[in-house]
Image 1: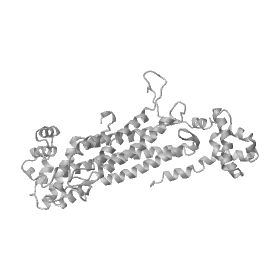
Image 2 (image 1 turned 30 degrees about the vertical axis):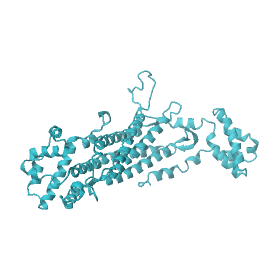
Image 3 (image 1 turned 180 degrees about the vertical axis):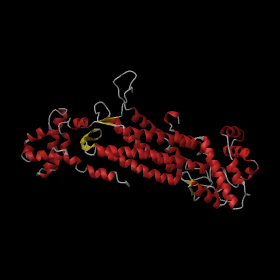
Image 4 (image 1 turned 60 degrees about the vertical axis):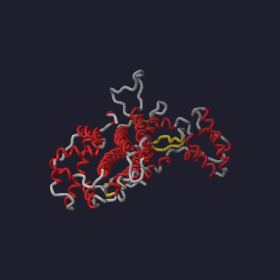
Length: 436
């Protein structure tokens, strides 16, 4: 991932030096367990702790010659450790080290991603509570539907990110796996006790059946979960982009004093952050299909998954980490315009009350089909007038309606209060700790 979208903490997890440090820790813990079991002589783990080092450039030089990354790593570490290094990696295979290391990286990356989701939830909660009863128009198909509140609108997104958090926690557990079972996963050359020891020390769980590699359905679930989170990010981003359109202007991204929106047009205030989030969401979702395709490996293992993961895992985690934190910032600084919301809400001459009128007429004794035709013919007049005509006035002067509904009935129909009567209930439900 290019530096533009890379946050330092996430970058460190995928840095080569950090990866090699985890690999060395896996080897050292395995040596500790083997010493305790009497498989290798005492002092090996101590030598690894005290003298175990590596040099990423030297590892690359060795790999160019031997064409094997783990052998290159072991060779370089041995150059620092000395004679005790001959007992390192005893009975283990490359995937034991690489897959367990990958699990640690994914687990730690998930912790950062969970932190990003928490920032979004905190920012959303503040805006939801501030706008519980801020009336705005609800839209379906992009067209005015019925009134809602901006707090309720945001509550739906809050619930989505609460679900995202729960899914990511599950995906993190799914991938927090240690596999040290030797070639083709039979434990023929390394005891299950070694795997259990390393797993416990690293805060992982032993793989039930590794077949030499950790099964890639675990990774597929992890990256599919990241893809769903990315879609929730885009869903919110698109909402802001629509609300920021000049014709709508109900909310917009913060625009700083010296910020410029266009090299040609000084008046422009563009939704560049949320547009960027839409793009980043595409990058994250692009990892889902390769992750699913990585599940199918030949027999006990092949390395068709390897190149995919070396590119996909860092880029996907880095992109999502950046996107989550950018979205949290967008929400924290979001500019919200209640007056404009009310202006838009009232711009179409009361069309938003059509359903309440329909229901009132059915309760007054008119069939639903006939009531629908009555309301629709008046509504279409308002629509054609671009809102200059009033639905209430037309209905009050319609003989089919005026004989059925009183002035008091119309006051009840054309009332915004019912649309936010349950806003507190919806919002409290969305903010519950456990969101299903």
